Length: 142
Figure 1 (cartoon, rainbow, N blue to C red):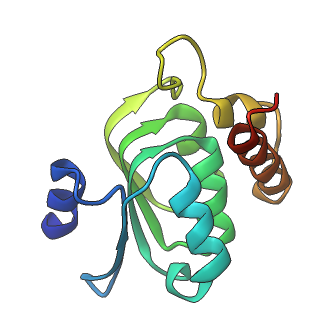
Figure 2 (tube, one colour; figure 1 turned 135 degrees about the vertical axis):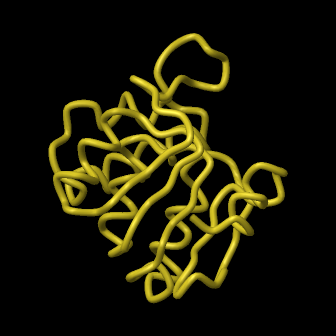
Figure 3 (tube, rainbow, N blue to C red; figure 1 turned 90 degrees about the horizontal axis):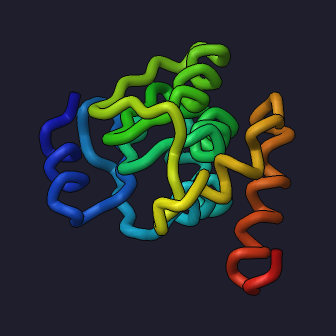
């Protein structure tokens, strides 16, 4: 466990960070799954074989990290479905808080990304669903 990265997450300085050989190589601050998708799209080489640290990891974020080739994943909060998926793909994961589900910002139900990928089986199948959900949220359509 990298204490420097944990400190970034706990202080709110970063919501996502990558580490290789125990060294911080990248950190990002952003809402929801957007920073993880940006990494996959623009910095896939950095994500490959990296230890990923993220504030909140549900099944959708776990799918992105699997597709990116993460070596291990740590979440300050991680859902059961994320743990199951990461384990199924042989990616070691750990967490500060384990939760049954990731709840939306209002606390009124499931996170829209958790809801969108609830019955999707593989990370490859999750990715277009995640992108579609993000687009709908950004444009305000449902």
